[in-house]
Image (cartoon, rainbow, N blue to C red):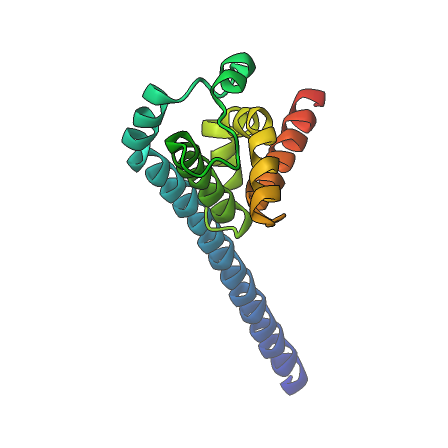
Length: 164
């Protein structure tokens, strides 16, 4: 009788441990889901909070997706006296900041992909010549490298989504 009672007690204890492990695991998963949701929300809030500045840039810069207009606008990368270089540098630095945030996992990739993915790709592609000229002029091959990495990832994601 004592061995049956010991067996029953052990089974109850084992069941209790299993129940605790399952609950801890569920709580950890819920915490991860909440963290991901908050990161997506923070990414949207960041993007929304900077909308006014992006509107100002769009009033003076050509549409990123219009390769001809961009080519006509692009200043000589080495002309530091041309205010268009500062304007374009500020604009692309904003996108570099987004890229750094995404690449570090601070901003959410999927959210940026949905709200600005095609614009980031178009901006990098159409300003690539200027970016390469600035890299050469300043002797800084890493200039806008975070943006380049992100646009490569965005392109790959787009290919994967269209192939599916």
